[in-house]
Structure formats: structure tokens, C-alpha cells
Length: 122
Image 1 (spheres, rainbow, N blue to C red):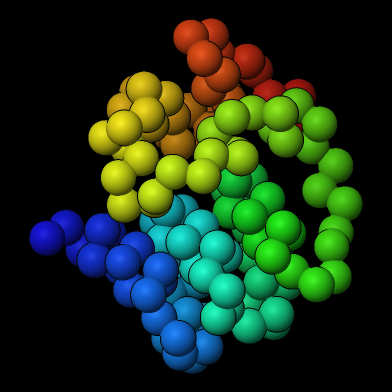
Image 2: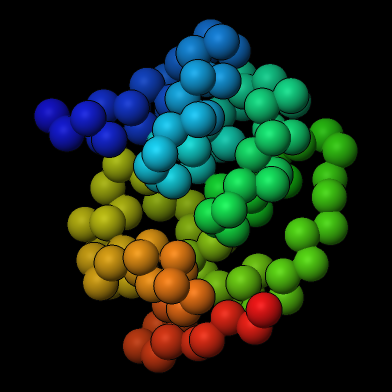
């Protein structure tokens, strides 16, 4: 099994705040996003993830954090990839945006949105 998928499964199933905190430092945004969605993740970890460079991770952490922050990303927050509820371990298989390597486009400043690419406003 792929190490990333293995860590996503751990992040989804873990009840251990320390393990979730450790997984929240993963290089892979899908692991961090799974941590942000786990109800057992501590508020301290969620608060750190609210500032994650991957907006879909920050968005999910903000949903589950008690103290919300203004993410101030109107274009990104309308992006279906940000609000996606698919399982992180399979959405790269299920979703055409993920299959088209949407994360690297996000890193490059492009946000996938249906068939078009929208340049992120800085």
C-alpha cells in the first residue's frame, strides 16, 4: 500500500491526539486534510492547520476549529476542490481535477475549476 494512502487511513481512524498532531506535519496535503477532518484532532492542531499553505486543508481545519479565522480567499473558497468531501485516499482516482494533478497547479498559482484554470489573485 502506498505510504500516503496508509497515512491518510491512519489520520482518518486515529483517536490519538499525538499521532494526529504528528500526521498534521506530513508533506502530503491529503494526509493533513484527513487530519483536519478527524473529530479527534485537538483544537491546537486544528488551529495550526488553519494556516496551512494548501487552502483545502486550511478550509477543512477552519470548519472543525472552535475559533474560526477569516480565510479571506473568496475565489478559492468557491473552488469545488476546496470544499470536496470525497475520501482523501481515493479522490485522486474519482475526481477529474485530482487526476489532472490539481495540487501541483494550486502550488503554481492555478486553481482547477471544472475544465478551466483560473489564475489565483495574489
